[in-house]
Image: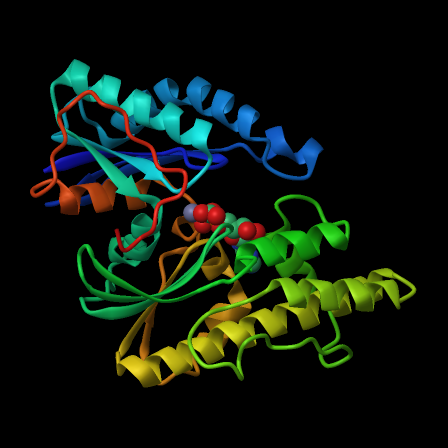
Length: 329
Ligand code: KG4
Ligand code: ZN
């Protein structure tokens, strides 16, 4: 069974074809970074327009890459939320139209389900059940994953998401958008232990996260420095250590509470090298998607759609998008 995946929830247009028998056949991605760089962040209206201009050429190119005739698939999966309202609508309307024209079912996929299943695309894929940490630009979730579609939220952020904190601190340090990867690269050059920032929420009960206080601590420290390039790198280093330590400690706590022996880490911040390295210290098997599938992509949506196609087929023409959509619906 072959499924076309369409991801347009934010600033990446991701298209892929997943085959339940042969695996991922092809994936293509158009990143809108150049469009948004002048504004220092994603401009929603520009994101929607960019998606609508790129969808048709990308769909053509993914079929060519997969060596399939156009339309030779069994279903279309699209990200229905959460995400930017306009960007989601562009992808959803496009998917519905294609599904109608090709007379095949369309499936509304939860973006975070796509992320948390993304390590399934790897050769060394986890089996259910597992604990999942989803750390993206918009979300920080600790999820108990029993099976496909059986998700219990164990913890979430009460303010900024982990990726959002990376992006905001990067902006504060005048690093270019997108901030997370730029800050992580700079952190590598920083001197360890010159600064130390708090590890938020570790002493509080529960598995929730909070990153906005950390951002304020960085701002205060930055304002007390001469603001040289060395200060910048040292602050970046200390900030990354604080976020990584917090995420790793929360994972340990969740493992203790749930007794899971498999941990899946996904979402954009899952690409962070230091986080990947430090998670290896945990006494569980840790699974990640490859770096390019940590951030938004069509492959994870195609995969989730292929898993769901047999039991969730929406052939109606109604277009549903959910800019805010809880994972454990
Ligand atoms: O999953 P994603 O592509 O989009 C959302 O669903 O939000 O995640 C993007 C987030 C951004 O905040 C970006 O700064 C962060 O992931 N990110 C990183 C790294 N690569 C991407 N954060 C820290 N270190 C990285 N290497
Ligand atoms: Zn995402």
